[in-house]
Length: 150
Image (spheres, rainbow, N blue to C red):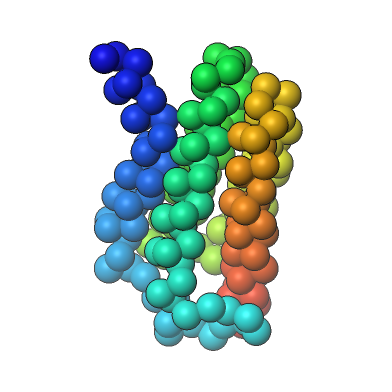
């Protein structure tokens, strides 16, 4: 029973916490009022994309944990999630657009490190993190564009 609870936690932690962060910050979202760079998607795309990505992240971690309990990899995984969730607060709640650029670049680096760490133990876990990396790379472009245009 305990293992099933652990499995569920590993799988659903990213999406549950992402939903909580989204709910807590929803009143601060000003995306539609900002001057946006080319290729900026409509705001409805973000909750759909993040739901899928958080599920992939959870699956990646679940598969990794079935193979390894490497403490460095676990630390990096939770650190990149922390940076991910806090970015929303920095960008939308605090409106610190320049600092959010620095923060998201750090997040990108942490995701790359996380992918390499996962690859050492479970290749599919690493591959499942690639869409997340690509989305955050695109979000970095949007973040920089919004900072420069506003």
